[in-house]
Length: 249
Image (cartoon, rainbow, N blue to C red; front, top):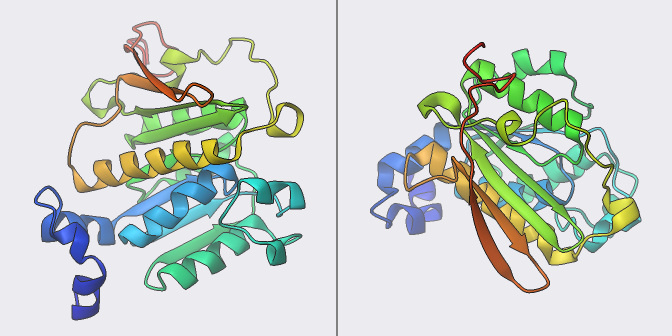
């Protein structure tokens, strides 16, 4: 690190758990963030500010006026602009040292092979079940930890799916063949700060995984009831019959 970086990241370096070694890991890391909407817009600034060296952001959407109630990385001037471009510009203002790959694209299962080649961690900030399942399958195959978040109405949830140490995958908790109701902010609404709370926890988990510190949410699903402001933790076990990470795969 040069003198400017030592100063910029000094408050991290002062933490015994992170120090020079942990901060160097962050600078050398590559995080893939799927979605630059509510969750992504909250996670990305902290990943960038913390010094994650490379961020790849994938989202096929453009900024809409209805997004601005909660997607605080974007501004009124960004309306009509691709979300990945708006996010890239905001990150450049926040920390110009971070390399940003902006991909305006809707991911499918075939895309992940190339994307995950040098990725340290994946943050699933998407809003649809097929993308979450595709990201999970790819992360299991590549041995890359997945930090998953979701938020709708006043309810949020976060977990880490990391099979490298025998933890469960997303499909252990949400089987791919299970019928899932169609839930979207456009039809059900979402409490503005909720996506920020979930997204920043995702960023925290990703930074811990990269730096190799603390205890991750692997094997635990953290749920938030925003109306009562209560956090609940549910244990999640790996399923031997899981079609993605089970004994037969």
